[in-house]
Amino acid sequence: MTQQDAGFAQIFDAIADLSQLMDATLKRLESTQEATNTLAVVSDEVTRMARQFNAAG
Image (cartoon, rainbow, N blue to C red; front, side, top):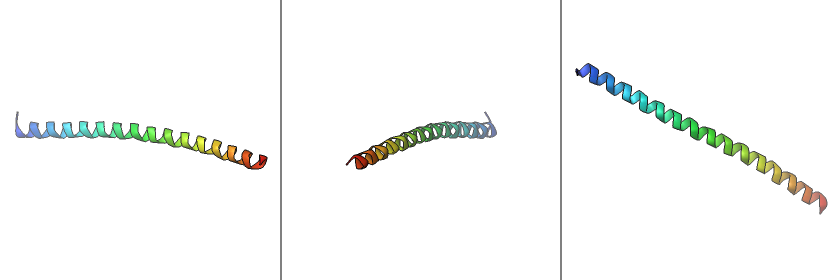
């Protein structure tokens, strides 16, 4: 293997590593978005319940 071949192999390995990191980051971002959406739904429900409680009391 020549030095040039070794260099190309290192570059391709680095690109593969970056691709895996990007995939993992996107999965975490999707999880964060899902959690944010759930929090918004729960927050709206708590707000609605608090308004009902205040209206009744």
